Structure formats: C-alpha cells, structure tokens
Length: 228
Image (tube, rainbow, N blue to C red; front, side, top):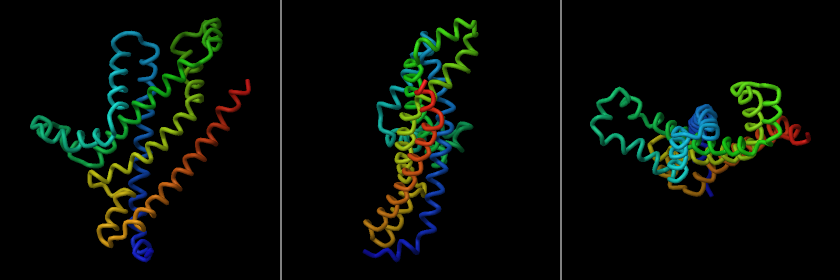
C-alpha cells in the first residue's frame, strides 16, 4: 500500500472534514428546531395539521435520501418557474440543496422520535401537572418537552450517527466533503483502497466522538431521571 499520496493530500481531507462537519451540524441543528414543533403538532393536534405532518414524515422516511438530494439539486432545475423565481440563487447551490435535503430528512426522523417519546411519557406526570392547575402551554414547555427530549436521547444519538454517514452523499452533487476528497484522490492517483480507508478513518473517529457525546448527555440528563 502507498500512503505517500494520501499524506500529501491530507489538507484536502481536512478541507473535506470541514465541509462534512458544517453540513452535519447545520442539518442537525435546523432539523431539531423544525422537529420539536412538528412533534407537538403530531401528538397534540388531532386535525388536518397532524395528518400533514404525518404525510411529510412518511414521505421523507419512505424514500432514499439520495433520491431526495437528486430531486432537490437536479430535479427542480428543469422547471422554468423555479429557475425564474427568487429562490433560484439558493436552489442552484449544491451546498444549499445538500443542507436543505439533509435538514428535511433528519427533521422527519427526529419528529417521529420525539413524538414517540411524548406518547411514552408516564400518565402520572401529565396528571400531576393538570392537578396543579398548570396551563397547557406551560405544561408542554416545563413537563412534556424536557422529559420527552431526555428520553429521546438514545434514539436521537443513533439518528445523529446516521446523519453523519448520510452526509457522504454530498459528494454526488459536486461538494468536496470527506467522501469527495477520497474520490478526488482516487481519480488522481488510482489508489482506491488508501483513498477511501483514510476517509473511513475520519468517519470512524467522528462516529466515536458522537457516541461519546451522547453517552455523556445520557449520563448527565437521562440516567438521573430514570432512577426516580
């Protein structure tokens, strides 16, 4: 094996690492901000709004993220109305389309994770809040959401790891992420094993970091609650 070319292109991998982290953190943050209100609509509302959220989550969970990315980046460009709209400068950007696709995808999964945690809350916690005369909005903010988000940590940790691995699809829309850096090294030096094993090593270290972070979060916020 020849790793000399890999070491020479290490700055390229570091640049790809920055793109991967940027996409991951932005997508997870925006997806979580979108998922929390959608999960509340999914569980609290029983009208058309809940059905709309269900259709959205079912559509994004039922189709591959690669197809979603292709539809966003390549598919929308075929419509003249889109190309002439105010959104075209954004939708013509590979970075924006990747971020938008990843955000909507992780938001769909996170919505169902949080909604499931809300449904799994012990009835006694809700009844105690109602017995104290707590308004519905205050009960959701102080009792339901904090408890549901803590219980959702293990499942959300898995979603964050899946999202990290999913960002590797960004390279198919010309973005230079970790996988894109490996593809470029492979194309230049024809060293498929060395190029992609280096990218895999980066992903492995990032995955270990996420696992450690969520284990710390579970120890900090979830385990004390489960001892009660």
